[in-house]
Image: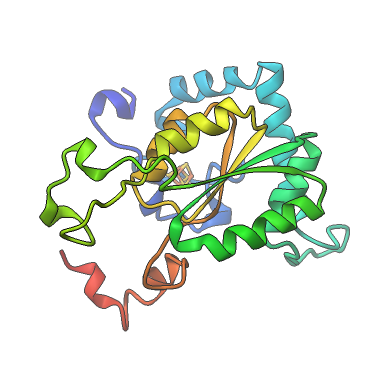
Length: 230
Ligand code: SF4
């Protein structure tokens, strides 16, 4: 009986096999409880069929080539990983590989300086940039039923973040590829849902750590232990 029927949920995050000894990494590898490689074969087959679509296959192929290109001197043996490319370089290179011309930049009002710099970098690489701030459209928070005590600046006509407008605007401008810069949790989800072009994230917002969410995770057994308790 498959894991599905037994009600065992996939749980790669708690896999007990060391990463390079895993069944998903090598044919001779081992699996752990909740292994989707062994326990979800029908879903796997369904996913693999998607790559038969020419466009999807090419996107995946270029993403995989780009992944490898982020490491230098891959001909050396034994090979020790030598990562050389920052994420913004990775985005520029991937967009060039895909022959994208027009990039969409959906950003947060808290990152206006960064958005200007990112736009210049993209333009220097030859891309057209269509950019849109989260507050564009000035739709009031009242439109989605936000009460005064639920606003950041209480007692004001606060403008909501409007990720659906951001996505629809970039759809309207026919961007080839969209880049998110600092959208909030949930606002980014709506953007993903409504955007027609593929989306990548340059930076995930973290108000406390300078947009480095993993800083809190790395410190969760020491100075940020407080995040481990509800
Ligand atoms: S696919 Fe299986 S072997 Fe690979 S990480 Fe998940 S549980 Fe472990």
